[in-house]
Length: 248
Image 1 (spheres, rainbow, N blue to C red):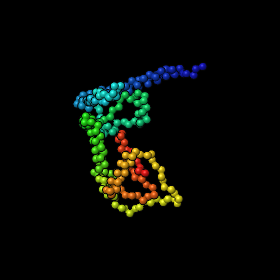
Image 2: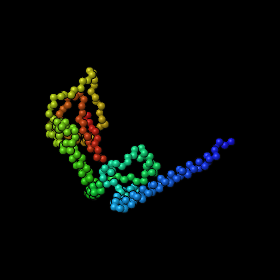
Image 3: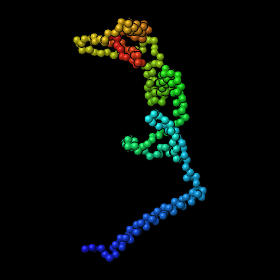
Image 4: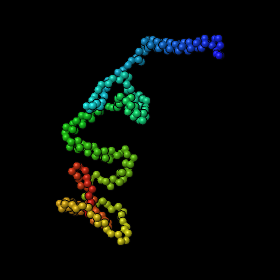
């Protein structure tokens, strides 16, 4: 048995028509507002809708290596405020989108002129040889460790106070006695450490003895009074590194 009244179906149908009419009216209002906006712009504000296109050289990774490709961007951000106001995504979502293939390209804004200058300098160093590149790298690292480069450090004053600990030039004499003597108290009956390293060739032993004898005559080393001590130094390896050594 139906409980619908005589005019219920008609009212329900009328309701559907009313919603569709509302939707049409909303779309009509949007289209009218869009037309009015276009008319307003055409009256003298066309510059606001002008599209700027910038062509960039993008370094992309392909199967054959790195290649530069041209990319056109419409209305790219040009100010620092525009770049910093771009939407930010979390690194988790970025990694997920990159893994899923949603991200096709990654662009890193950089200074083109600076990159060109650095590339030219690198080419010149490579052309001069590996030795020149290594020498320039060492010079840059040395300059970064100068006193002038440390002026911006909050520890600059403390470092200057103890600048005699690591002088720029190796002194030809022993450091000044600071009045602090380090002693090691051994338990009575303790034997000296007599563990020796593997035996060295005779020519190496002679070279080591001559080295420390020359340092002793120059006043840079003195006889240790510690119960156990050994001269410690580093020997240059063929690969360019250093090997820790003790003269037992």
